[in-house]
Amino acid sequence: MQKTIALVAHDHKKPDLIKWALSHKAELCKHKLVATGTTGGLLQKELNLDIHRFKSGPLGGDQQIGALIAEQKLDCLIFFWDPLNPAPHDPDVKALLRLCSVWNLPVACTTSTADMIVTSPLFIGDDYQRDIPDL
Ligand SMILES: O=C(CO)COP(=O)(O)O
Image (tube, protein in one colour):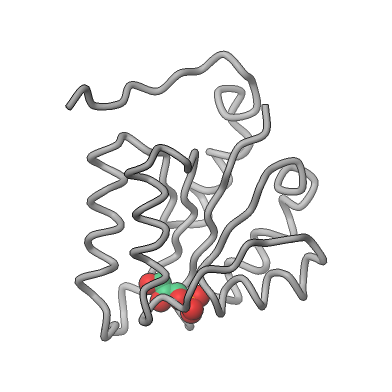
């Protein structure tokens, strides 16, 4: 089943995300891809895939992706945030990660976790239904 996957990386982590996405292009191209602005532009160029680009993270892109989660329109987030450099929009970053926990969304913040998510039979198959809050 086609899923919607969001791809986001902070500036120092963008090379890692591009490398990771190239190595999983065969799986990623089966799904609908969305991204924050700058990340999406780079990925589009490197992967040559159609990617819906939201606003840049500091301009509200993280919040737009958060809204997708709250509306149950997102299936997975790959978010390589930067633990070594402060972001001006840190509250937005925190809010996005918080919503992943609220909605039990599969989220990867490292390449190893991202590898495991997109190669998991639970991700690739159609049967797995994650629990979502009954609010
Ligand atoms: O800041 C970001 C995520 O918090 C990413 O935004 P960009 O993809 O526009 O750089």
